[in-house]
Image (cartoon, rainbow, N blue to C red):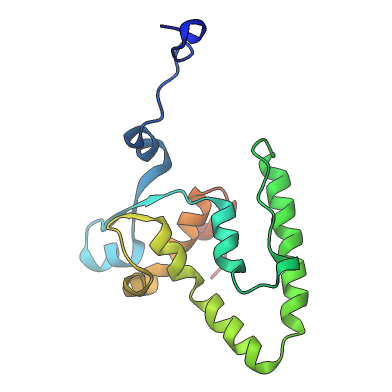
Length: 161
C-alpha cells in the first residue's frame, strides 16, 4: 500500500502507543541514587507537552496572563521566544502581588518540579507527592524531563554548581 491508495507514505510507520513510547521516552540514570547504589538506578521519562507545562504553571494566573497554545506549525524558536516573553509578563505580575498572595504563588511554584516529575516519569509512574522521594535527584530529573521535552536547551551538567 502507498499514500495514493489510502496507506502510509513509503517508509513511514504508524504512530501506535508503543511507537510513541519508543520515540518519546528514554531511560535515564539517577546520578546520586546510582552513586549510592554503586550501579545505575534507572527511570524511564517521557516528553511532556510544552503547552501543558505552561498551563500547569499558569493555573493561578489571571486570564490576561494565560499562555496561548503554540500553532501546530510554529517553529521551536518562536515557541521559545513566546515562552520567554510570557515569563517576563508573569514576573512583572508577581512583583505586584501582596505578601499573602506572593506566599501562595511561591508555594505553588515550589511544587512545580514535583508536578513535572509526576507528569514526565513513565516508569515507575509516580504522583506529585511520591515524586518528592527522589530527594537530591529531583532537580536532575526535573531538568532532564524539560530538556527531553525540548523546553530546556542548556545541559545542566555543564553549568557551574
